[in-house]
Length: 70
Image (cartoon, rainbow, N blue to C red; front, side):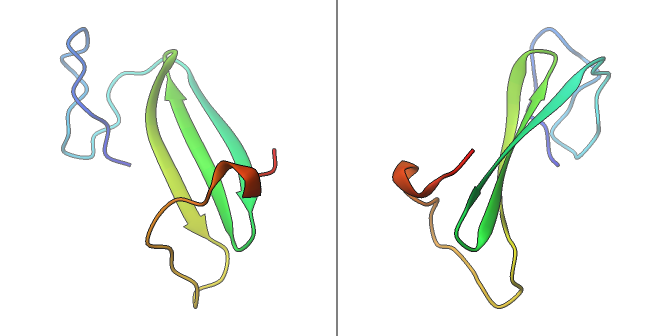
């Protein structure tokens, strides 16, 4: 995960560091062939990941909202 700079947190950088977050929540959902993961750090959405379930699948863009199940 590569967090973005946040003005209020000098320990968080865009070099792959974890920063000093005290609380992380990961929301997950599914779509045919992939998992969607939304990372929320200290009440701030920080990263959205589309993770294919099958190694042979790839996605050029995120799936439409109608295909996502929570």
